Amino acid sequence: MRGQRSNASYNCILDLEKILLRKVGEAVGRFRMIRDGDRVAVALSGGKDSLTLLEALLLLAKRAPVEFSVCAFTVEQGKFLRPIAPLGEYLKERGVDWTYYQDRPSLRLLEEQPEHGCDLCSRYRRRAVYEIARGLGANVIAFGHTADDFCESFLRNALFTGRVSALPPITYSRDKEFRLIRPLAFVTEEITSRFASSLGAPIVPCGCSLRTGTVRKSIRGLFSEIEKDYPHLKETLLSAMGNLETDRLLDPRYLDLDGKSERAARAILPILTE
Image 1: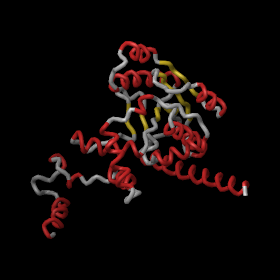
Image 2: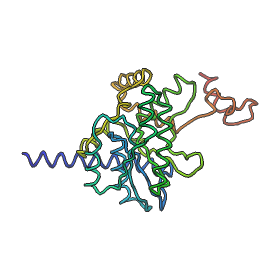
Image 3: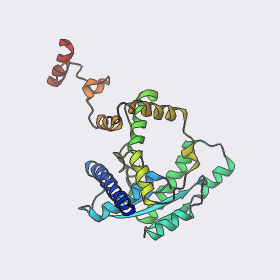
Image 4: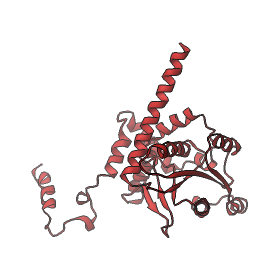
């Protein structure tokens, strides 16, 4: 009986790995995130999402039709709630090329301005990330934002800032030195939670991750409530982000204000006949 349970558990992990790699592969392929000869540096925060991303890219590097290498780094800003050493030991056992970087300016900021805002902290982290990636010889930096983050960002912007936008799956640093990618765009946190748990890797939470703002908390609550009846809500929302009908929105830049477009005429007919 114990052997049967072990086999079932192993098969479950394999199935989960297949789902993860399929979704990561879809994002990488659709947005041309990784190309031949790239060196990808994974921003490892110590949480479940970035650990899942690292493992997925390590697996993908062995199977992808293009050749690329993977390394990882962690920026210490003085906000980890547990010692980082167990994570380092785990990565060493896995043979992962990992860099641990203590950002002195961030640590001074914490001492001098303990109540500083997220924007300032993010600016310090961004500078550190680019410095680390440059030292690692990486031209691509991968972040662990999930499908949940994309959906929450989309809804937050639409409801509270009046913009139809979300996180970009791929973008570039200002000077085009680095390509910034988010390969977990189609992977939900339900998957990263289960996969990270199957790895047995030490999770090192950050104090910032526990301070969920009022808006984000409200949006997460909204998703949780609606998903009771519509479990594929996030998948539908992700699909909507990739299927814009600009001539059915309110931005004059994309509307045929002079009636010269045949598409615009076809679009208005169903409304007139309803």
